[in-house]
Amino acid sequence: MNIPWTQPDYWGNEIAYVTKAMESTWLSGGAFHNQFEDQFKEILKKKHALAVSNGTTAIHLAYLGLGIKPGDEIIIPGFCFQAAANIALQVGAKPIFAEVDKDTWCLDLKDVENKITSKTKAIIPVHTYGNCCEMDEILQLAKSKNIIVLEDCAESLFSTYKGHQSGTLGLVNTFSFQATKTITTGEGGLVVTDDDELAERMMLYRSHGMNRQKVIYWHEVPGHNFRLTNIQAALGVAQLEKKETIIKERKRVYHTYVELLSGVDGIKFQKINDTVDPLIWAIALKLDEKAFPQGRDAVMNQLKEVGIETRPGFYASSILPIYEKHSLLVCEDVSRNVISLPSFPTLTNQQIEFICQEFIKLKK
Ligand SMILES: Cc1ncc(COP(=O)(O)O)c(C=O)c1O
Image 1 (tube, protein in one colour):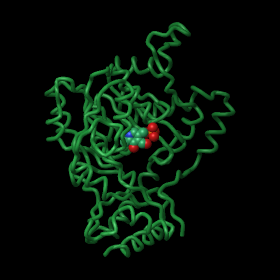
Image 2 (cartoon, rainbow, N blue to C red):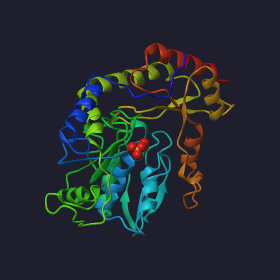
Image 3 (cartoon, protein in one colour):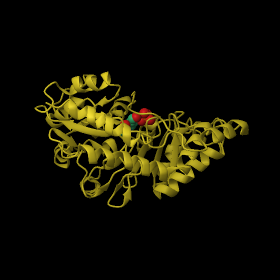
């Protein structure tokens, strides 16, 4: 059996809608693009939804709209996919890394509090693997210090926190539709906000700083081109038609893993607080070093030998030499011991049983 870590799945009208977009000759903007944005406004109950070329440009666009500038500090978890930190550096700001909770792997509020200075401009809760950070606490802290909250929801689309869709509580929030994500457009992203002025600025920055409705070729700000194509949006619209099926199947996959692996000594699932109803993007487990003395990387190789592809946890920011030297002991421990198992929604229960059986065999 050969089981990939992930694969994009088509559920219905993907090919038909992409063809329709191409036949319409609207390749850049167009009806699917508008429909895709409108659908997200409706689902997330946000005033503004801007489709963009990927989840990284979504963050870049949000920073530009917010006016993040050189010298500003941005607090980011030390264990997560580090797009927000890299774009901070791209705009001359300084990423300041905070610890994550040892069980949820989401931002540790106490450490965030310790890292706030007069230069802190934004806090970025990254909802890793589909879990959600404790948003009420983060929002309260940020409000008391007049700091912006930007949720990076690339991995948490359709998870909910206290009944709110992930990505609806920060001032501005971003999503990714990259090929492994819950909804995909191949590459793609989204920024949402309720703030009219911020949305208007982001609209300008998304498209060369020009407002075509006013004067074509007039650059009001030094913008970028962060646009999503109509062809990609067509793929996204087709995926959204099957949103409920995708959610149901992802939940089945997660619950089947939980049934087979929770309670097994030496394996710990990412803790999900009662405040969260997660839509897990990637099944991730922390291995006890005593139960798996060969180490996480050797476990990955052993699984590869029986045809199972896995992924390691993200490198802690403190291990990556591109960032200023710092130390984050919890992030480093999580980083070293987390393994992610195949997680896509068409994975069958039989495949999951095989994965779990082979995985448990590797325990001491
Ligand atoms: C948390 C997080 N933020 C941002 C991104 C970047 O998104 P993209 O790959 O669409 O640029 C990713 C991953 O892909 C991610 O996992």
